[in-house]
Image (tube, rainbow, N blue to C red; front, side, top):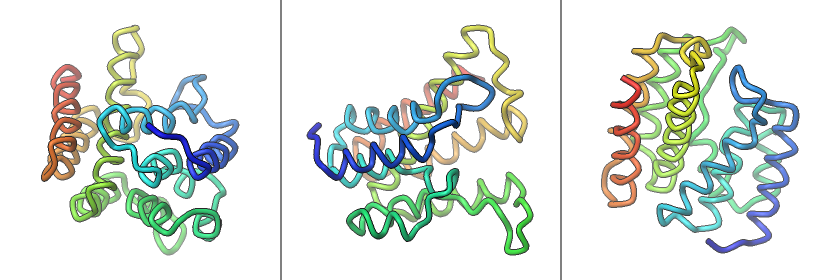
Length: 187
C-alpha cells in the first residue's frame, strides 16, 4: 500500500471526528474500526488512495458531526461519492429513527447497485465487524446484547450483504467468502 497526503488527511479527519467514540459496549476507540477496514482492503489488493481514504472516512458523516460539504471541500470527488454510497439514512424526514430492518434492506440494495470500490469497502466493513464479534464471543462476551436486532437478523444482514456485494471480481469474492466463513462460525 502506498501512503499519500490524501490518505493522511483522511486519517486525521476520521481520527478526530471519532474522538471520544467507542465500539459498541466496549472501551475500544471507534477509530480502530475504520483503520481496520483500510488494512483489510489493502491486504486484499485494494490500494487506490480513494478507496483507502473512503474506508477511513466511511462512518464520519453517518456517525459524527462531519457534514458532506466538508468531505466535498477537502477530498477528490470520488471519496465523498464512495462515503455517500456507504452511508445509511438513519432518520426519517420528521427526525424519528427509522426501523433497523428498513435501513438494512435499503443499505443492501444501495450497496448491490454500487461500484466495485464501494462494494469492497462494504465487505471489508462487514468482515471487520464479524471478526470482532467472533473475537469477543471467544473471549466470553455476549455480543448479541449490543445490537438493535436479534442475532438471527444480524447474521441475515451480513450474509445477504456479502452475497449482494461479493460478485464480479476475485477480490470481492474472496472478501465475501471470508464473511461467509465467519458467519458460519457465528451461527
